[in-house]
Image (cartoon, rainbow, N blue to C red; front, side, top):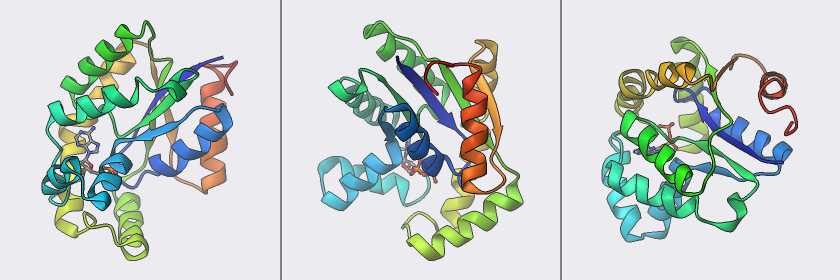
Length: 195
Ligand code: ADP
């Protein structure tokens, strides 16, 4: 049984939290590009130094860098039963690259889950997260920039995935457990053997 999923949603929608929970249920790794960049920033690697110069401002890391990183990650053995990608793809070029990478492995996506939430709820959650986690890029300017990039470049991808019959939309407002159950129920219709 395999499950190859993308989880999308604006900053603060709860993607990271729900991706980790879903991954555990499905027995596949959750792969967060943001987490990989943060680990590299913390470790002071060359990739980290480069990523930080973009992420601190809320800008996207250049596609060639991000794409190469995802390509490497998806070549690892633990991805055999599937994966949940969180934070990738974020623009049309990354959608094409993901298709190409999966094509080389002879596999395709099973579903793209979009977690939805309105802007007021997102801003309230991000303000709380800034206090609790102290992430370098959770400044008001960076948050605003990331939400703008999401609206301009990432949100339109849902239309493309819907046209491919891959899109599953789930309401991200509510308790963490409640949202997980909604996700599992919604995915049950798409990847019934996996959930
Ligand atoms: P958020 O969704 O709150 O913006 P993430 O943890 O997903 O946070 O990403 C943090 C930062 O990492 C982004 O602002 C961006 O600079 C970089 N990043 C993550 N994923 C990508 C991606 N797919 N393409 C380019 N940059 C990315």
